[in-house]
Length: 262
Image (tube, helix red, strand yellow):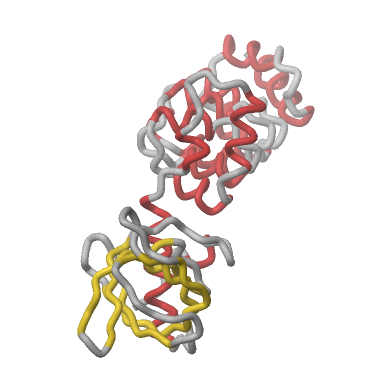
């Protein structure tokens, strides 16, 4: 069973998982919930009775029920139960074998895919750039990248303002991206050359002249890509490109030669 996106998950980060779990003891199995899941441990919450320092055996499964994995751990901390939440056991994983490590990566990846980051959820539509920047910085990069690839319109409004180029590239792959949003991405100075290539090759924008002008005049556009795009632009669009201050000098020369030839 191969790990899912393990390299994209930040080490040490704990996810509010909410996955079904079961604690196994001498009296049988005790259903509980796995919270704060990370590569090093998990918080088990339920009608549980264990002392700090004791070893425990438990299973965690995905919400879909298609993966269940057994783990062994040591209770690092016990928080007394109450009527609302039950006992909370902070458990450190012990001696994970290869199968358990791979299963844990899958569990982490599944949780990350399903998370709605609270800092972004708290933003109001039209939030100021400083507010959006602060909220984005509170979400781990790996989660922002994963979210950008599938985000809805509300989340995309904020993610378009992300300063990290990998988030912008993930947004460019989003199947729900709108033409106006693609033009915004094409105009971001920190967009990677690979992002510009993705936007240029996406059939959704093949007839979008404004987007192609934005790509041609981007300061980081690869010259071969600019040349391919120029071939599909008419003279009025080429003249419009010449007015953009971000136009690379090498691309400007090619436009002038095209116009001179008529």
